[in-house]
Image (cartoon, rainbow, N blue to C red; front, side, top):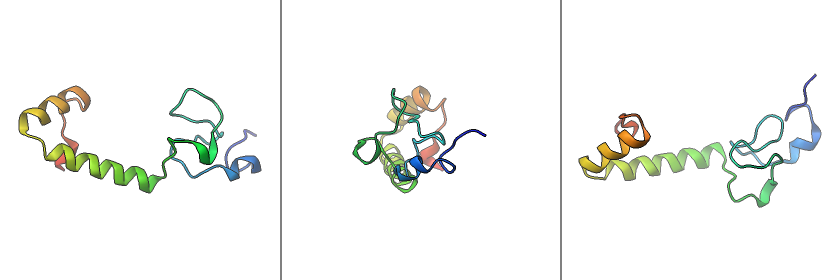
Length: 83
């Protein structure tokens, strides 16, 4: 049986971060083990959702030309902030 976050008691003490894999590895940064509460990049699902809402509000406030540029460069031409 493979070890995962819920079967390994050592992983239960790690923070509730959306970048934490089921095996306790960080999926965002170039190191295997989670740094725990000291990590500057840890984000809960709620913090991530708030950040996305804030980002999309900022993008929606830009002029149409800038929105088009950003949509083409980073979102394959889509504008998810206009939903």
